[in-house]
Image (cartoon, rainbow, N blue to C red; front, side):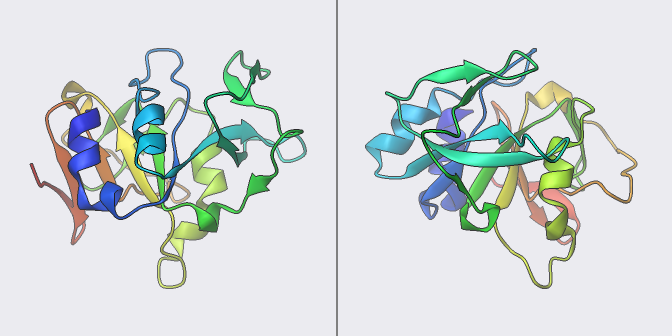
Length: 175
């Protein structure tokens, strides 16, 4: 998955990349941290927003930063050390998922964190960043997922075999 993502034009042309600390069977992406830094890019991690339920902040992460457990037992950076950045400043956000389809729909873990955080992207004629890239195993691809009105579609999905991009309402494999 890592080499497929890093060879993509989307990754190569991005500077501010948000990843996540994998949890509960999610696709592993933390190996990207060293690649991001070696390429001179910036890495961000999600942090649970304390005042708004089921929403995320994104905080710049450096390998020497200490991570703490949030209320769900997931590691995240301390917002006391780094100020959150606007989601508009991010180029790519890697999004964990349970399943995806060729229309860019995803099934997440059920908390709605990414959908609430990036709901402004539903108005695509005004907002184009960040690009949401789902990370999954190829076997997590479903024929079709019926999205809810609040579900924010993915721009791409990367698996261990392919990089799918959104192309006129359908994901197509570019590898």
